[in-house]
Length: 119
Image (cartoon, rainbow, N blue to C red; front, side, top):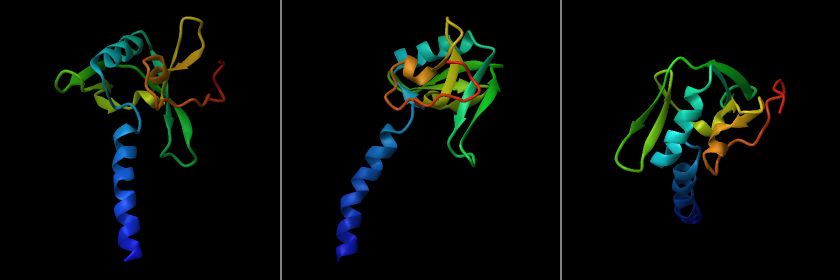
């Protein structure tokens, strides 16, 4: 009985965490801003949480686009694959690396700094 009560109480939290995790689907305005940033880059850095150990990996920008499903739900496509812009870093005007998700207003943007990049 206690197990089922705990599970029932935790289940809604799992859905809330899943719905707000990362920046894969975002408002159209934010997605277009992320696309504008990506199109100005030759190379970006992706934070890989699933890698063991978690690491930063350079990614060449060969193509960038959007997949908009309706008015407000857009996904950023990098090199033919949907990406989570919360884990992408790009060079800003000053030449410093900046999180793309943070730049477009994503609340889940990674605030870590790659060790090999000069912020």
